[in-house]
Amino acid sequence: MEMDLNAQEKKEGFFQRLKDFPSKLKDGVTKRIKNVQKFGKDDPRRIIHSMKVGVALTLVSLLYYVRPLYISFGVSGMWAILTVVVVFEFTVGGTLSKGLNRGFATLTAGALGVGAVHLARFFGHQGEPIILGILVFSLGAAATFSRFFPRIKQRYDYGALIFILTFSMVAVSGYRTDEILVMAYQRLSTILIGGTICILVSIFVCPVWAGEDLHKMIANNINKLANYLEAFEGEYFPLSEKISKETNSCVREYKSILASKGTEDTLANLARWEPGHGRFRLRHPWKKYLKIAGLVRQCAFHFEILNGYVLSNYKAPEEFQSKIQEPIATMSREAGEALKAIAKSIKTMSKDTASVNAHIDNSKKAIENLRIALKSSYPETEKDLLEIIPGVTMASILIEVVNCVEKISGAVEEFSSLAHFKETLDPKLPVEIGQHQLLHRGSVKPVLDGDNEEEDNSSPHVLITVHDEQPPTTTGKNSLGAEKN
Image (cartoon, rainbow, N blue to C red):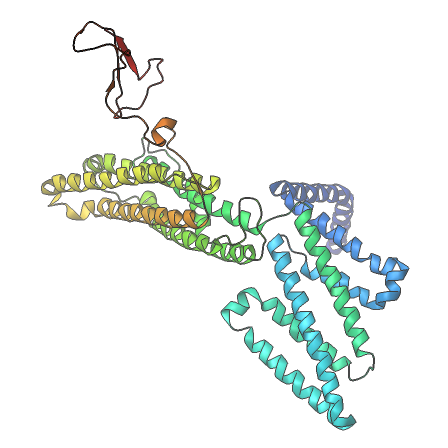
């Protein structure tokens, strides 16, 4: 009886699942479509890149579809399709890197493979496979060993891999065929055609530049540091105890910097393959981005420690915090403003040294005020030294952050000189201040010809006085005063 009930329940459950299947399928498909739409909206360049790959594949397929081309290249046209699949990358730098590596490696390995086959044939039918085996072993082992060198691994690893593959295939297959030159020519031609199509489509159809992505990434990372410093006062000295620290967006922002090294290294490497474009010249100092990125990441590590004190329940007494709050707030605020000015300078590729240095100087003055505040509070806190340690430690870390901001400023200033940033004047000053000093202090007394001023003191004259110390105002009053006596 129980077995019949269990069978009946299983049967009803099966029919219920079968009945719910269409609705679940519809919900699943709708969810997947929404995910795809969101993924595409996050970066529309992904959709464009997919279409670019489709265009390149269609173009190289003409080697098979067009009969004259098929007669010329034969089945070797498949190598062009394979080249497009493995060479076409998201960025122009990635496509150029793989395309040039593949083309040069194929050309070199094909020439050496043909030469190895002809050399081996001088040793007769029995000696030919032995010589080919020795050459394949030697060059294959040497090329593989070269891939362990950091410089080759970073820039030419794909080329070394293609060299090993092409040389081995040409040398080994040449042992069984007499048309080794024809085969090498067809494969090399189709690979060059495929690589060329990839490069042209990548550059001229909605290009994605790795250098531009790296440039924006560094500026955005510096902005993330600035946002954290601007929000630090409100987080460490909250006006209300109900502030939610778990939803601190600034924390989430700076944490992404800690894991950005791999992306930065990859983008910098790819950017070095790209030609001059837009604001970036041919020999743009891409390595300097990595130096700035290292300092930014170092600053972010200090933030990780600071965040521990923000989230900690053990803080210095409120009386002590009230004494250090003003210099701490000024220090973090001015350092954040300096970082924002640096980020803006990088984004616009213009120098803003005066503004950055002014904010850094203000943060250093706040450090001096903090030292004075600590000295003044020392007699009162001598007995409770352990209680103020968290506050003092937090302040010392913030001082290190200011030093780190100064280092970032120095690195960006060095980079701006190499990258030829444009000079900008302080917008708070009028244009005349930045021009050459043409006016000097003094008075001009134009006198009519024939007049004798010593004999007739009542003769009219004009007195013009110029003050260089004060900039001309825009209130409608002329800085040149004219009096008629």
